Length: 289
Ligand SMILES: [Zn+2]
Image (tube, rainbow, N blue to C red; front, side, top):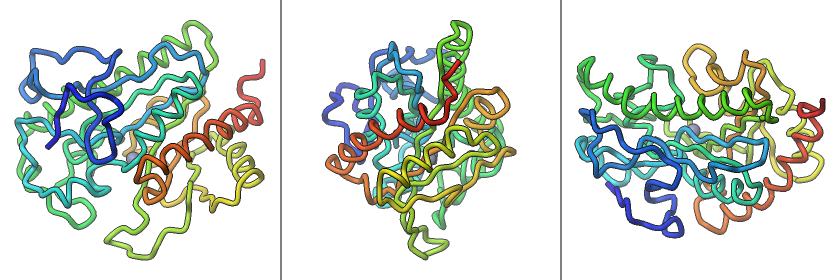
């Protein structure tokens, strides 16, 4: 497993995990899972970004703590969508740069712990994911699961909360964009997914509806609405805990991974969305006061 703390941003591709970045916190030395040579529990790009949009990615990276080896899986499994959201880090990093927006992302594989699941909910630490048995997640003790929560999930989600609280306290305009990618063809349901991009929300559709309008009027993309997922208010973490119910306008995005699997695709999508996302925010009226 890659854990290359010295690699430059430019060398980051969808096949390796993002390394530590400026603005990330130091690793907690009082840990049982992460060591000083492991990637930090979250990353922050452009921490002083002035844009009202805050980007987050719960599944940006595919790092695994050294202590856990490869979780008993081969590269063919670790590199597919069960390991991480292919391409979304490259897209969102470019978007954040283009819009002068802050981007908080999770560098650890969702096979270690899914940072868009509430603790102890199904698939938080998956023993099976899209048909693949994860040997390193079998028979874990409460303490072993707790270490993954305490050292990876909580620092990441606490960093997002701190960013939201800071902006709310200072009355800065704020919109949350939760960025994901999804497979075009899951093993459990081999019908190809047609949506190039999907717009997902629960009850607050202020940004979502505006973005669907913008995508349909400005592009010929196949736009999904709550496809292939919906927000699960019981099990999901990021939208239910941070946005929905807290009056923070938000949208969750899924881009089909085959469209952003290489740097060229990532740049094209970042360029397109850096034009369309602000238009959707404007059209929604959420920042009008
Ligand atoms: Zn995801």
